[in-house]
Image (cartoon, rainbow, N blue to C red; front, side):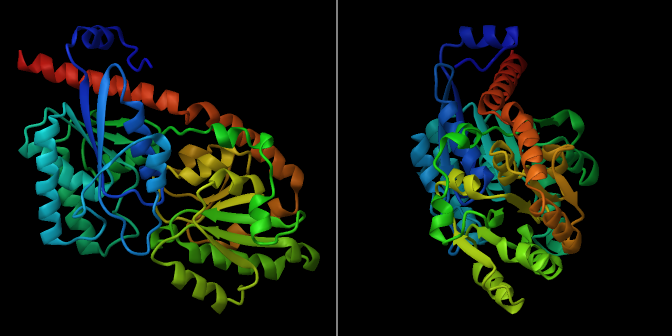
Length: 412
């Protein structure tokens, strides 16, 4: 697999006597895009030019576990029990020490961190261990929808300090780079590079060859039911209550026969599952909103969906929208973060929190099979190349080679 296409980088790699060693660190393999990316990249960068290892922490209670993705890719992560989601000074210090020891043992050329907690502890450990190249990927950010103002300002201050010791910060969309550089002023434009995510989209692009109906059978949905789904972690930043509010508004404004056929499905797990289910019952939607939990065969879910929604108040690059578009499913999403960069002119955008507008757009699509098919086909053509794993690993591999080569030259 050839990653590096620039002549200087290729020559440099061929002259090296050993592989470039990469230690990848992520807080945990919970449901979401970062877990998929960390495992995919660990597998991809074990070849003739690179050697990779993955460190991750434990899943918190109530979170969905995506550890099966690592097994699927043939990746054997090193689990560090002290590393996880919640802030705990004693456990965090222990996690920092654990990461430091793994770094000293593996002796990587590059430490690449993913997610906020791993990005903080991993980069501190890499600095202490005098690792030449530090890379951090912002999959989203924790500066909106997570903490109060004082806590947010503290974490922003920490990120600005860490950025000074980071060779490259990767933004996963142009919109996210603007946030990092202009809105939050974490670093300058030269140190922040946009590399769009990549995925193994084969199963989604070839849904027409799969048997449909498995997911519908699970809930006894009829073939003519119109399924509107939202897929992802059940956490506050995803704002599932907006999805439920939109469902209630739509059902109150749709023709009775159409309202009878529309079903709303929430796919995912997380700490707010009980609260969201209670909210749906409070809104009188217990028989119209269904909770499936997390589905390992997520392509079968998309095969039976008609419309995919996203109601987040903060996003980097939403994996569910990319998978939906690859599956030729139309999407409706809030206009936040990198969502517009993914959808372009293909998807339907609404303002964050505007559940009435989202409901009206859902109703328009539910009433028009032709429009759903048109938008789905356009979306598939957009994402199949832009978000391919081949393009992604090629760009990232080129960056790794450039950074290591630059660091080696600076020593001479």
